[in-house]
Image (cartoon, rainbow, N blue to C red; front, side, top):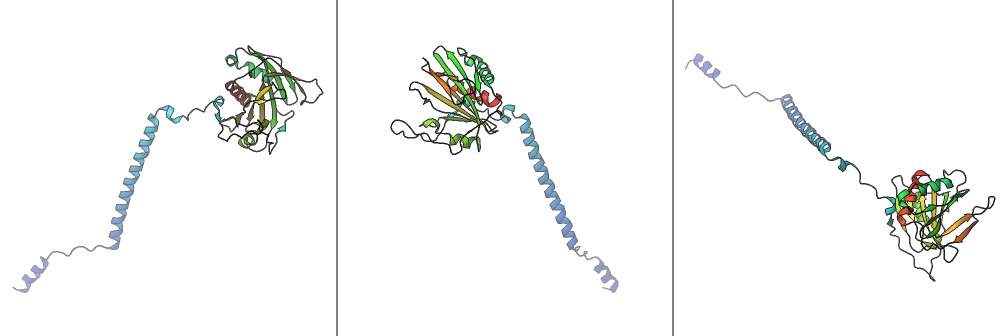
Length: 267
């Protein structure tokens, strides 16, 4: 073999494989990362689109919060009842007493009478008497087929939150049982107390407290006796209690709850 043939044989050898540089590796890695990110982004967009579609085709009722229980379906409080001593329970004084609100409450006797009258079919047999008003309270005598009773609306102020004020007055009037409570969406608390005795042996009453979110409190008392405010110029705390032949309270718990709701929203 001569030199010329050796050179030709050398030229027939396969070229060495191309070298892979660091730049080549980085470029390939970036392409793979972009490809993965693109796939993940597409998957995320697909999931969001499916969720949006499901939201659109979902029945409207599913997106509406459940209806709140009406206040007259207040639930009994879980606080344990107190054990009476000598047949009764001592009255526990509030740590933050209610204060009287003079002249800054949007209510009068006419409002109370209208609230009762506007209950319409809820009180079909109740006759509403002439309303009386003095300072921060209104009195309204009502009569039905069972006899005559009264409603008394008192307005004041409380300290703290509505729930704190309701807890503070849990044992008003020497009650042994905690009663029932309902909370409205704005935080207003309606608390219906059990029946309790009044000054006269045959007289008894029931009180519903409405602790509004604005710091005002309305005390609605129903009694199986009538009330008469004394003449102008005397203290609003002096009133005449007249016993009647009414053996039951004028309103049911449900009716008291509806009246309380009207007071909470409309007074």
